[in-house]
Length: 280
Picture (cartoon, rainbow, N blue to C red):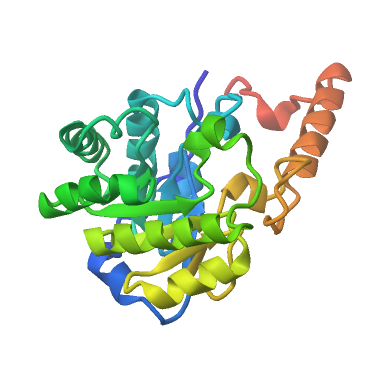
């Protein structure tokens, strides 16, 4: 089964893609916009409105129905990353490094990151962790691999954290998160995602570091914001507290499928307009 959709292919008019230095230079300016994308068509639709597209390991739940991001593979990230790069012409494309692909050593992290960039054509990778990952971030950055860091609630560590609750409610945990952010910024991260923390932590980090901060469940005072696109579009019935649904995709899909099924069962579809008739 195939379908031809020329509108799904990006326009051939040259468009200058946003660069890593441009993102870094946006610190303190107009807030940066980042959404997740996992397919070429979605990337094409989101691209004109975003500064960055994140090929997130959240595809575990969104695309594959997995319980967490832990099972995600390099093959998944490379394949979906390449699709998004093909679909986007303007936004900087960042790809999550999957769990287990970078933690063991900085050399292993370089091999994984190099593979992701070579196979996908993306501009940067993202990895989770603070002080423990600072040396790795410095190693990658010094070798030409731009790194976006991720602190606070780190979904790949869900088994160690014991769940997805907000972080930083104790003074000790708050201090650790701020220290993590400062460490990855000093190591050369070009931006930092701050996820699921009490707001004063996000504000303190944004004021302390020289690179842009991208909030998700953090604060409007971050230098930018990111959401999982399917959450933002209202594809799921239940979403985290920090999500605002800007669409009703679930209802629209359900309604379209219901009407299609009814037309098929009543033989109202296809009609002569949707079938090929003999030439007279």
